[in-house]
Image (cartoon, rainbow over all chains, first blue to last red; front, side, top):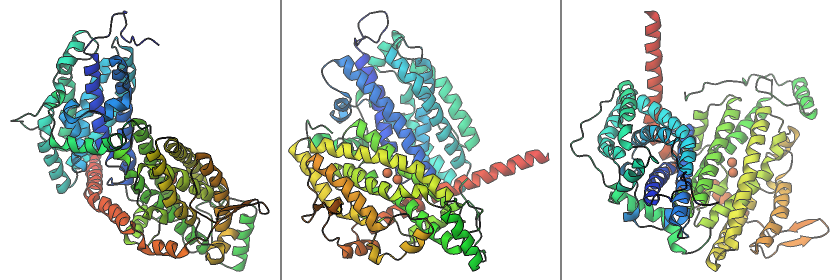
Length: 261
Length: 329
Ligand SMILES: [Fe+2]
Ligand SMILES: [Fe+2]
């Protein structure tokens, strides 16, 4: 099949590779973080739910890496992109790489991410790009489930015991500073937004604020002021935690170059 | 959402000879025993012990394989391993539910696991040292589990038999997937093949031990066979496993680490070298390298999750109270 996903017969946009890679990195890195919980969750039901969500994210990442690799046309595949780049080349949002912390932080991080990606994919189901449309159709349902699952936990914990409420407030204090980045456009994504291929992140702020506002109201949490918002993931300016995640994730690919697994 | 009271069978059956004979007649007629049926206390206790151990094995078994999820070598393998470990958690869940029909709660069983009172399969007290271990565990450990579990799909206790049908389907998928990982390694670079052979060397004997002590030394077998909780002896199942697995190893070009392994034409099966039962009992009694770590990990997850479970309960109560207050207005 010709690698011509954009309708209308025009050449693929030169920024498509970078923009798709950004999305793929978000999903892989957050999926990897969730997978770290497997077997260590607070209850058996969550030992099933957390890998479920991780699998959703990793599945989306695979489709996107594969698409990016085909766009690039240099013979790289999904695993080359996922495993064989260095820290500065990863383009994920900072919130995706934040360490799991406790269960409150993990659930809040998931809510923050899913509450932006649900409207994102909902808008992308009309993209002229067939691959993006395909991913969006599946991911929008998954993200709706993640919003529900994580949102319910934020409410339970925020409105649970004194300890859980304190932990939930600490999670908000820890993670809210990374949420501004969710709505930033990179150079690559801006170019595709202009062409109508990807949804504009600025438009997602309203829906995100509404979901977070509703959940926080029920959870008894306050949306904090953020004096120093943190950003930089799209330019490869990560926190220190990402390097360790990658060292672990890339170990076999690095130790046995060129092997097939 | 999380606490489950005592349900199902009371232990107060009067075990007259007539009652026991009637029960045995139902078993002999291949009738399924259901949760609300009268059953001898010994039958109930045997099942609780066996299903509990089985459930704990699924849960503890998530740890050695979980050890490689974050280091899986490709996205495909990472997703497959995550899904596999998640399946094992699901098996634990069905089995705890089956045990609950016999009147023990999941909390109770969990406490028995964490206190060391309840056992789980000893195989999980060995460490996973390389990626090949993930393949070999799927191939041998899930493979041995299937041999053990297929007959349990016909177990006389209905809820256990039904749980096993679903579980066996997934275990055989795990077994094929594991074998495929080992095959990829065996056909890969020399370093990968060596990794596969090393893993087979380390997991072969512990896998044979999964079937339990030799028939001569097995205490629970006879009564369990009469009650049709068990249908084959440990040695019979072990023999089936060896006969199925040795040709698979040969096909991969890997050698089974047993110099005495020989095809025996007369019995139509393999003869094998002696199993080191001292090692088996040492690991059962807590002397394996990972016994302490496995329970510590489970206990850590349980203890560190306590505040989450308490919060969920507190929230549910608040919610119910608010609802009741609203209804009263
Ligand atoms: Fe299992
Ligand atoms: Fe399995």
